[in-house]
Length: 288
Figure 1 (cartoon, rainbow, N blue to C red):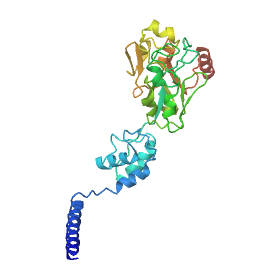
Figure 2: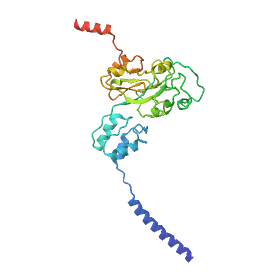
Figure 3: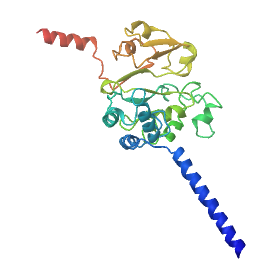
Figure 4: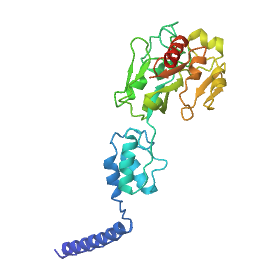
C-alpha cells in the first residue's frame, strides 16, 4: 500500500513539473496573431483560387498585414474594390488594379485548321499533346479536349461545339490562372480586360516558319513583321517567327489588325470599322 502511495506521489510530482515546463515553453513560443489578419481575410472573396500567388485567401491576408503595404499584392478575383476595403482596414493607400481576364491565344477552329488526322486516345489535352501534334497537325494549336475547362472552379470556360476552341465568359472569369497552368501548350494568357472590355492580341503560338504554319492553319502568324512596323507604341515584338502584343503597352489603335495579312490578330468587342465610302459620306454630311 505504501509503495502505491509513493508511486502516486512521484507521478504527481512528475506531472506537476511537466505542467510547469509546458507552461513556460508555451509562453516562450507563443505566437500572437495580428487581429487585422482576420479583418483582411473577411474582405477577401474566399475563393482560394490561387490567382494572387498564395495558397489561399488567408495566406494572402497574412502576407499583406506582415508587409504593411499593398504594393506587389492583389486579388484578381476581387479587383480594385477588395483592395480599397483592405486599404481602409490597414490605413493604406489603395492600389488600383487593372482588371485581368484569360485570353485564348489560338484561332485554329475547325474552319481555319481543318482536321487532317483522327485521335482515339484519352480525351485529355495533356495526354494527347504528349503523343502527337493534333488533328489539325499544328503542334502549337489548341487540342480542344477541355483540360482548361475542367480545372475552372468558376464555370468561366466552355468548349465551343462548332470551333472546338475554349470560350471565356467575361463575367465569370476571375483571372485565377488555373486554366493557363492546365494548358499543355500555354495557349491561355492572363491579359488586361481593356477599356470597354476591348482587347487586341495575336491569337497564335505557332513558331513554324510562314509556309509551314499556314499549311496547317489559315490564320497562323507568319512573323512577317508588318504589324511591328505600324505600331507607334512599341507594343509589338517578333521572336521565333511569331508576333506578340504587349497588353501593358497596347493603346488599342487597331492599326496592326488591318495590317496583318494572315488575320492572326484578334480584336475583341470593337465596333465594326467603317469603310472609306462611309467615312467620306459622313465627312460630306458634316461639311454640309
